[in-house]
Structure formats: structure tokens, C-alpha cells
Length: 190
Length: 149
Image 1 (cartoon, rainbow over the protein chains, first blue to last red):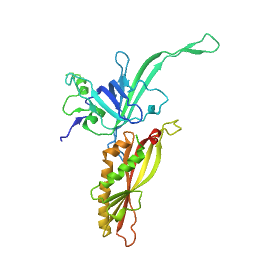
Image 2 (image 1 turned 90 degrees about the horizontal axis):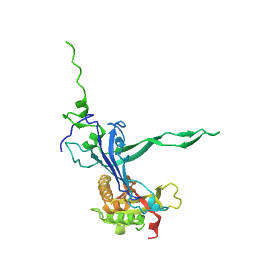
Image 3 (image 1 turned 90 degrees about the vertical axis):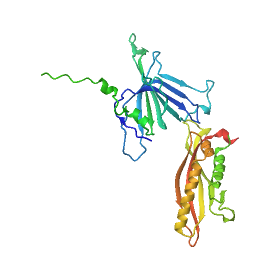
Image 4 (image 1 turned 45 degrees about the horizontal axis):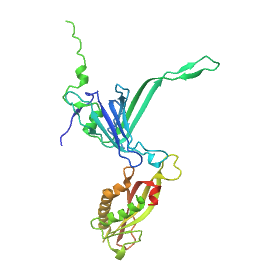
């Protein structure tokens, strides 16, 4: 066992595929795949506490060219209601597959360990249209003008691989993308 | 599937009986036959509602907590020896129950097995009998349809 030294903040682009695979006894075992997720800084990481520490990740699910944020698979397309078998109490595993790079063209999926939460939130904005031809104004059209999706994952296994994602960290000593793209200061006039 | 409550309690006695050093494990008795020691006495204890789906009014599906009483009875010459023995058998019983694959399978992925406490009862005067009661809580899905099976 060797120590792993990570350089915090040197890998700000944490992009990849996030997959939830249900393992619950109560309800259908769903599989959700978010094709391209970009994590962004989330809640604080508490290094001292009286409770089990967690690593919270929040990210934006990015849509593909068809406007899809990913897929969700239900194991039984013939399920009908009412049936208590449709009630759902979720448990499952979450895996993270980093985006392929030239250095690592076929990245392996990483099991993020025990997750206390996996929350998916969709948002959209619309532009209301009002008809004013009568005595009462009424809404007659509501097109969706933009939509987005977010995901929040709460990890409680403090592995080096999970810290790398949560702290946007690269291997110490390597030049990260943030530093590589930083401009050199202008030369001082003599 | 058979009633999980009965399956858990039956398996619990089997697991306790298989613990190294335990001479007898009985269920819902005041004591083991022939006062064999060390012994484990399992009482069925309480089964309580943990949570249920909103709007479910006929208890067709819900989660339950089962809290059987697991009492380890040992014989010791003095309090120090009894204390060490109770710690030893408490450790063995808790380890065996929490690691038993069949019990883990019975509670399922939406349930769990939780070690809650161990309480030593005051010994009787002049007695060489000592008891420690271990509380382990089993959470499991309750399906009404299992009861008729």
C-alpha cells in the first residue's frame, strides 16, 4: 500500500459518464445513465466532525446532439398499475467513467462505493404567450426555451479516487489544465 | 417467500447455537435444558413498523424492525472472570449474527442488521450466574402476501 498525493484543483474538468444501477428489493431495479456529466464545486468537505464524513458531488448533466441527458431503463415494460410491486425504495451502486482522453482512450468504470444519495433534477425555462384579444388575458402558448439537468451524489467512502473527483485533483507534480492554460505575465518594460 | 419474521428468528437461534463455545441455544424459554453454560436464550421480542409508502392503507408493503432479545448466560467464579466471559461471548454472537449470509439475505437490500446495545443485568446475591442481553435490530420489507405462504 502506497500513499497517493493529489494536487487539489489541478484537474478542474471532471467530465464523464455517471451510471446508477438499482439493487433494491422494494420496487423495480432501474438503471440510469447520464451520458456526460461535468462536476462542479459543491458543499464544503469537512475534515473534522462528529458524524461520518461525506463527499458531496454536484454536476450538470450535459445533453447530446439529440437533446438527451441520458437514459433510464425499467426492467419490465409490461408493469401495470395498481401493484405494490411498483412502490420504490431505492438502493444501488454508482459508477463513474471518466471521459476518454488521448492519454486514456478507454477509461475503466470506477465504483464510487457506498452512496447516501443520488438525486437527479431537471429544470426548464419557458416563455409564456398571452392572448389579449378579449376582456380577460389568457395564456395560450408556453414553449420550452431551454432545459438543463443536475445531479447530486453523496459519497461516504474516502478513497483517493473519490477525493480526486471531489477536489478536482490531479496527480501531484503533473501540470494540470488550469495551470497549463494560465497566461504568462506581460514582460516588464526596461 | 415465507414470513420473514419467523425465518429470521429461526435462523438467529441456529447461528447462536453454532457460536464457538456456546453449549445450548434455545428460543422463548427461561433457560437452557440442564442449565448448560454458556447458553443463549433468544426471545422473539418486538416487531414494529419503521415506515410505509404514502397512501398505503392496507399494509400490503412496509418496512418493519424486529428486535429479538438475545441473552447470553454464563457461569463465572467471580465478577472479573464473568465480565471477561460476557465480553468474549458478546463479541462472538454479534460477529456471527452480523456476518451470517442467510440473515443478510433475509433482510434484503432495503433492510439491514444493526447492533444496538449490550446490557449486563445485576447479578443475584451469592449467585454465579451472569447475563448479558444483546440487542440486534433486523429491518426488513414486510409483504402482506408472505403471510399466507
